[in-house]
Image (cartoon, rainbow, N blue to C red; front, top):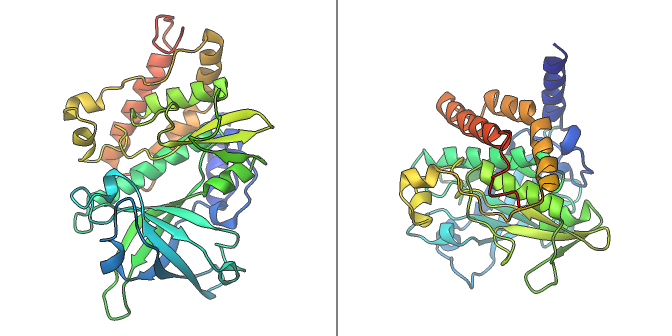
Length: 339
């Protein structure tokens, strides 16, 4: 009974924008202080924007329009550009991920975007195939799962976005989510972002172990620390280097139709877990496993009661994660993640 009360309390606090346990952290932006979906219109010349892909893309002028909780309408001038690797290839996605850049900070004053400089927007990949919208929801859920385990994780905000090129074109509303800017992430810990040119080794061992098991839990091999791939490194406390993962669309938990081919495996092999992290001391692994176990009921409940997932998705994801928990809690020291 007490456990159910705690879980219900957590969900209420989460809906209201508060967090508890491992999710507790300083929130510096109102944009990520709530998990309720944000309704936005992004007006742009999509004929030019979506065709401008590759390494050398241009900035394209756009506007964000939305109404706040008091009904006040806001209009913010921004610049946009396409981003990404696999999903920026037109043969893979006709609607690639987008970067939002806030050039005129005065435009955003008094809005939910105040203080933002750059934001990554995860989009729906295929414009005319409705099933691709499901992948947005599932990847968003993966980011939220990592929030349960550690504050060293990217905050995300689900959106319903009207990609409307003009007032004379019908609405084109699709799900998406915004990812916290790297500098904002580092700023929450009074840290700084590092990149491949910086001396970011060694990374924090405890955080590395937790990250490695999480990627294993969701069935993701599309990441690495050396070289830095699909993660950021932030320096905190003068000399601690914390790895923070992102871009989970190639994971078995998200399981988009293009993933198996992109990872050059067949569809069944793709769904099989493969551990890609290094071996850690038994003490570090026990600490990471304890973190997973502490958050187990909240993680499972979050999936079971998640309105974004349909019943088929819930059953598959719950089964996949329960298998992970059984594996990490077996009394067996002969595991690839223990040295």
